Image 1 (cartoon, rainbow, N blue to C red):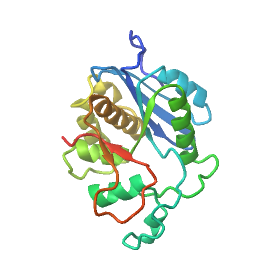
Image 2: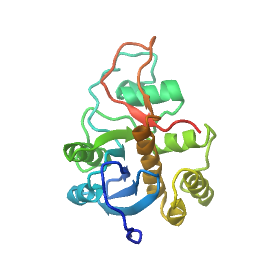
Image 3: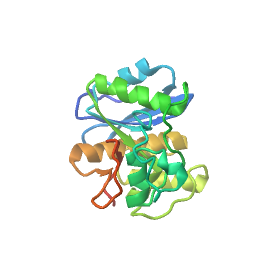
Image 4: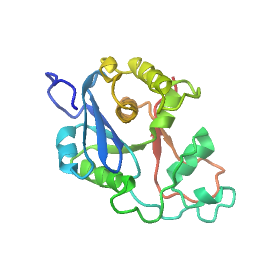
Length: 225
């Protein structure tokens, strides 16, 4: 269900955060003052509706990859086998930020799966004029919490803690408190987009001394609070 509509002219200084699933896509829109404009969800196969809702936002942060893996780290024996198939952003997120994702993007995105939905959204929103970022909401919340571990987002305590963190970043975040963990993840993505717009977001990528291999992918985090 969408939030009650707000009297707000859409514009390129807005940002959106999007949490992607195979069946539903959740979105949160913030204005230039990091005020909550809207939060709603869409059918995952209705990407036209998502793009129309994004309405010319300048930055769109999406919880998912923009493309399949090209195997840039296949020969890196310093990585666990699972992550040798991963993209550079996923490897750097774990190697340099201690945030190892529970998935690694495969060389072919399963048709109809959430990764394919995410890639389609990256392409559609980029074509509509937005800068798109890949984000990892769990990592974003960890950075907003100063690196502290958080209870599972599937628990009441975990959702409450995430809502508390968002309340320090987003004016009107209390309107999200009763919503699902997917909506909270979308809001965390929107905070990363706002940090990117302000020049504070951090891109997880290779650093000097890393083993060779870079496919150009990056996963973005907010500035640590």
